[in-house]
Image 1: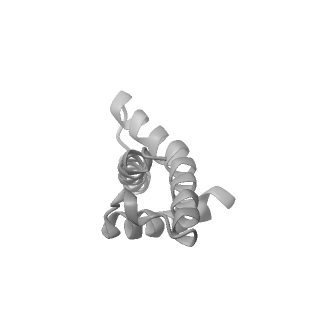
Image 2: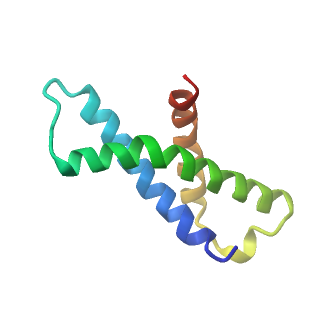
Amino acid sequence: MPNIRFFSKLAFICNLCFLIALIVQKAPLPLQGEITATVILIGYLFAGIINLVVNLICLVLFLSKKLQPYHLQSWLLVANFLFLIPELFLLLR
């Protein structure tokens, strides 16, 4: 479980790709290219899965009162949770 810090940061990066993918999708002239395709893939596919797993692990650690030794930043936990809501909405839709 010591990798939870790495995976929470990875989830945040995927969440940023999710946000960029939403902006690219709503743009009047969608961008095309390999980088855009990669960002959309990471944003739509991996962000929801990784963020869900990270939030569930953090919830289990929080409920078992073992979250403190991992020294996770509170802003990172809150940001990942706030990104999880629209990701779940799009995933379940």
